[in-house]
Length: 386
Image (tube, rainbow, N blue to C red; front, side, top):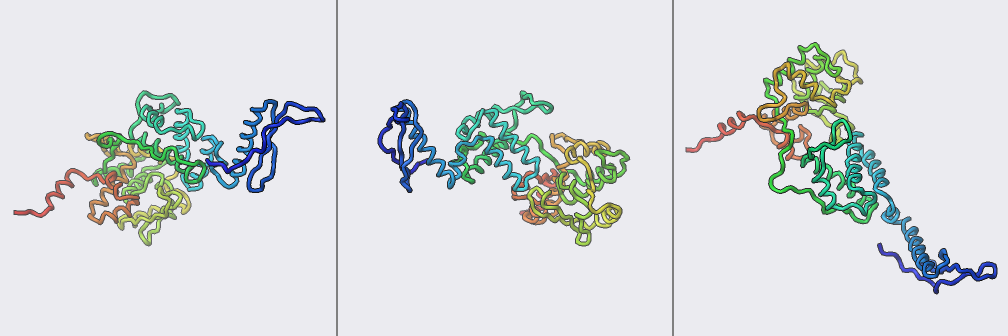
């Protein structure tokens, strides 16, 4: 930071107090643009008084510059103070409380692990070494487990702290982003995800819905009929668990055969509209007839442990939660099933992306899980050349 020019006038001189010469030295200085002469604090040592005057003058200049430059105003702030502002920004951007909490906790864990107190402590090399040695937290305590976290988790930590420093630089709270060129790289191919979901076959989906409908057990405060409609609609519209939990009878427009998702609930923070298959309309009208318009159709906190609830009905339907290829079926696999079935209709990929509410076409690689038979059928459908 370059300070404007200032001028010390003369050399430190001793002061007369009540006619007596005392050993306190003072220093005059003059600052542009008003060129008014002012006096810096003094002390008993002449050389120390001169150094003190220089420090006092520079702090006086910085204080005046801080009114127009937020970088100077925030120069003395700690990371904790910057985090408080960042948290307010995340909340103002309508992020969910869970996302805000997880983001702040990740940054706090990094700063605590590396003993970072101020922005000048942030160092990319130290961060990389810390991420490589990062281990999992014990699920029921703050003790560290011996198992190291996955590549994906390390990348999440890196992107979280980079977003924080980028926010500070963009909003002129720091002069330069200390992690501007920091990246998390791996040698060779990208590591495989620890959990790979699979899509349910049509037969498995029907068995799951029938098992839930015939069940007399109440699982996570949901009856068998409620769970059957939950699975049936999730496979039909591809909503996530927390999005399904927010639906009320008012969310459905059966005259136009669609379901509407509020902006505050949608993951991408937009008003979403997804069409419903005609085969569901008559059954939905009958099921929604006696429901209160403003009450959730599936109340409670089931969506936080939706996989456990689903596993209860999968056991009855004789559907293994993990197949021979170590592919998993959980509640989010119902969304995978929806997208896989949608791609199987041979509609354009761009239309699939819009219906499934995917931000990029590349996400189809994550959700589209064709069966081996589908690949063989695709090859068999190719023209034959003699």
